[in-house]
Length: 461
Image (tube, rainbow, N blue to C red; front, side):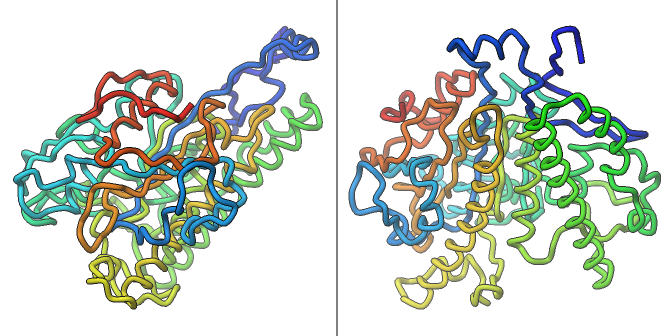
């Protein structure tokens, strides 16, 4: 503690070979500001965060859109119903279009264009070779402007690796289908799909040595390494901060435990961790830390994202629930068919019901992450209040490969700058990129144009 009795905003617990970033605590507020609050002085502004969640193959739009614009109804459309308790935190945006995901003379390849144009607003150059080209995505534009304020400029998460070369969709490089985040027009930001590797990036530990399978099995938990420092710190904190530290450490412990269980399951079944396509071969074959069940995989990565936001390790993220065009089956919810296959439903009722089941399953995982952000306090607000979560797809109807009237949902209040609880429907072909300009402005990274943008989206304030 310094002479002002104030902890630095970015405080770490330290142990031998380990460090653990802490969340925002009251002890990090200057003493004079705490005194000033009693007399109505303004509070310190907490940082804003933005995260983009991508789901592939479109949405069953009949179960997505409300009947009327304006205030969201108390009974939400079926696919949005799991978010009912967050209705006043939501903004549903209709009519938005990503024109550069359309063919525009390039022929088939809608899945590749849907993902690559989603956050870039740029038309991908049709190639299956190394000469890929699309544009800088809005998350990376923001990261380049504000990324120096945090240990990680941005995080890119996913559940499926996917190739970064070769042709995957009608002559388009696989890189287009498997990435939504692009640092430059020719450099996609590869997703992290391995919970263990992400955990060790966020909370580094050198205790694992060479990290053989046996060592990993009996590795000391990071909490064991920093426990002494945690006890010393808690002795200097008030009751509220002490409880918050306990809750935070418990969350870290839970994640470590779940990763270990996934590795044990993989160890018993013989599943090995595989490096992303194109990456160097791993020095040692380690057990896969990705839970076999895709929902738990999403939730585990989502929990790590929440911790990263909570500890201010990053303020920008993307999360692909699956690669565009993914044909994963969802037997656990009664859909043994491939996702891409049922998205081409041909208006057959049984296939439409299956695509809706998959959409609902993805929404349930997203709601899990929203709930976590809503239950995490940051000063006088919830972490969700200081966040902007964009959930959607680069395709509306998967059967027709439509890129207009996209399913775009926002959750979070953007630090009090968003007028939530509404369903806004914009004129046909309003650029989705207009929304991204609005978000960049709120993140302190004003962007003049992105793709075919015409200016910030109206009616969000």
